[in-house]
Image 1 (cartoon, rainbow over the protein chains, first blue to last red):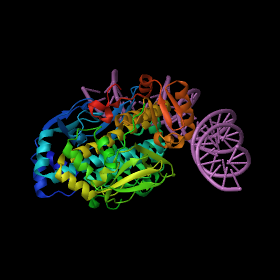
Image 2 (image 1 turned 90 degrees about the vertical axis):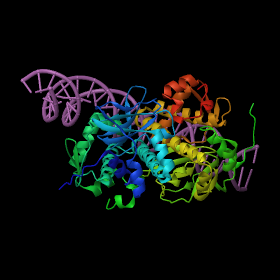
Image 3 (image 1 turned 90 degrees about the horizontal axis):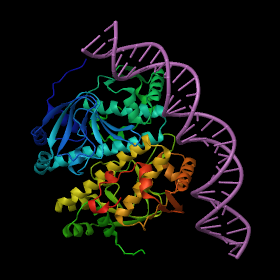
Image 4 (image 1 turned 180 degrees about the vertical axis):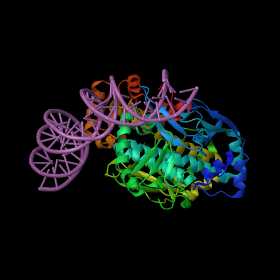
Length: 250
Length: 250
DNA sequence: CGTGTTATTGACCAACATCAAACTTAGTGG
DNA sequence: CCACTAAGTTTGATGTTGGTCAATAACACG
């Protein structure tokens, strides 16, 4: 059975940050006081564009977002995936120009938070600065894992690894349903995330299904045998740097 | 002609941070007061091991270091390269356990700085905290570029891109000699950095030489035609987030 | 229903990997 | 100074993973 809790916008941020750090009541209150400018972004539209000099950070409220770069011949590499509560461009507080784009893989609801407001909050509650920095540095850790994934793992492992990561991150957020999770990505998009062609993604997925590691019904994927999936993927959740209570039993 | 300036250990850190931010005299003094525990690390030895919980940050003083991960079948992926002045594990201030190793590709001199000392300095001069965070976030930006490099670029572009990055970073540090720079990596190591086999690296390098983009005499590489090399590599130095005065004319 | 997008399949191809041997180079000790 | 060694580079032959192309099937939506 799934219990639906209605979360307001700020709650999603708090929930995300609580997967990686403790927050006291003061800090939660501080976060909840952040001014948010809410925008709905259509599927396949940019939330932040490469080359921009943002004056706000974005906060994903709903939907699936992806950070990406384009290479010379026009092909796309997805650099990371982002769910509700993520702030994928926190680094824009320290790096003025965006070296990549962030786009909505599905229709998405996004909140924009003025840099000034974030800076003021950090000045007032320095611990929040620490937590946000931790969030940004965990993103960096995920990038590292993706370099290894794309650089050194064969297709099967590579694709399985992405599913493992998504599953564990969503589980930490509490947005999985038992062993199932919604990941609304086309096979072409999975290809962009793994550096593979859509056709090969298709065949690899068939193999994972055949091996009874994963079942997929549309956008909903179900982990059939976590232990084996984890082993096949060479997946170790350590790099996600979750708070201890969020990574139990995986 | 090359002018040799003798730099002490702290100077190297200052020099590196000055490639990405302005430092006033106070801040430089603060950095120079950091306590350093100097160690020489033999070739191929770890400076920091995966799984460790460091209580110090490392600062590369001399030699070439590489961040890396190992995958299931024992193959290695190099995640980034580090030269004199780099602090590749700054993130250990915020993430307790190392999700990767850092090893010396050549004999290296390394300084270890207690976390406590860094934290104290940041408390005293918050701007230094900003600069160090910027340093760590630029590393993250470099990871992003490497994901795209390894995921979506063919061998020629991929290898050329690594050379471009090394050249520009070294130039910003002022450790190039005209268009030449020392990069003491074996072809196997270049393979680990690009996700290619040593044999294919060899053939790719031959092609780059044949195309008169690059000349190599041992460890010393010379850029013959920067414009074309940059174009072939699809290289745009923006992602390095150098201070304006350090990226001129590239 | 039609229309556009996504998934699937088959045939073929290319980039890169692997294997193994030869060659070069730098270092070492007699 | 020269032989010897070990590490790294280069080459050729061959294999395999994954890419490309193109057609068809399955959906999703108005």
